Image 1 (cartoon, rainbow, N blue to C red):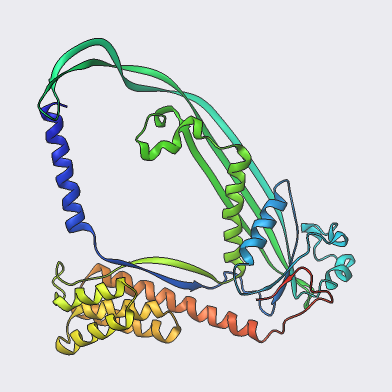
Image 2 (image 1 turned 180 degrees about the vertical axis):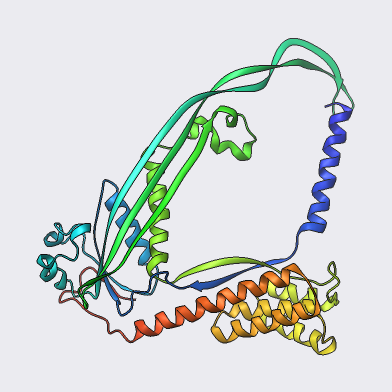
Length: 371
C-alpha cells in the first residue's frame, strides 16, 4: 500500500470517528397499535375459505398464520371442509352456499383470488475490472517495507445478469353471515424487482446478495411476496402493532435546554427505566420551566405508555417543547402524536365494538382458535 492509499485510509477513519462522535443521537423504539384499515363491525368469529389461483393456498396459509398471531379474532380454518370447496371468490354471496357457510358457526368469512406473475430478463453488462499484466513494480507496504506489486490494467468484461421482476396480487372479500352481505372488497399487491449479476456481481461484500449465484428460485421469490401480501391482509382487517424509532433530544447541540440531567434521564430511558427518566425530566422542568428538551423527552415517555390518555399528555408536552424551541424534531413529534391519537381512537372504537360481539363456538371445537 503506497503513501497515498495510507492517507486516504486515515482520512476515512477520521471521518467515521467524527460521525460516531457527533452523529449518533440517542434513540429508542416505541410500539403502538395501528387500527384495522377496514372495520369488520360485529364480526368476531372469522372463517377463512379457499383462495383461488395457483398460489392461492400459499397466500391463504400465510394469511391464516399471521392472523392467528393477532389477538383480535376467533379463527376457523375451513380449508379442510370439503363442503365448501365449491365456494369461489365471485360466488361467496350465492344463496346456494349459505347453509354450508352457516354451519361454520362464524360471524363472517373471507375468500380471495390470487394472481402471480414472474419474469426473468437476461442480458450482459460491460464491467470495468482490474486485470494483472504479469509485470511488477516495487512499492512500500503499510509497514514501510519494499515489496513487489503486480501492475494491473483496466479491462472491460462482459458479465451476465438477470433482472427478476415479479408481482403477486390478492383480491379478497369479507362476507357478513349476519347481514348476508359482502361488507368489504379490497386488493393488495406486492412487487419484486431486483438485479443479480452484471455490474453488481463484483460489488462490495455488503451487496454480496446481488451475485448471480444468489438468484433465488422463482417459487422462493413468490413465497416471499406471499408473506408480504399476508402481512398487508392482516393490517387491512385487524389491528396490528408497529414499531417506530424515535430520537431523544439532549438540548446541548440545539441550545434548547442543555441541562446535564437531561442526558441522565435519557440514559435511564434507554435502559427501560422510564419512570426514573420521567422523574428526572419533571425535576428539570420545575427548575427550568422553559426547557424545551425536557418537555420533548417527557413527551416520548408518555408516548411510550401508549394509551389514549398518555398520548394526549405527550401531545401537550410536544406543544410546550415547540413553544420554547423551534426545532424540526419537535414539529415531527407533534405530527406523529396527532396521527397516533387518531389511530388509538379508531382502535378503541373497533375494540369496543368487538367486545360487544359474543364469541361463537362450533359444535365441535376442532379447528377453532380462541384468543
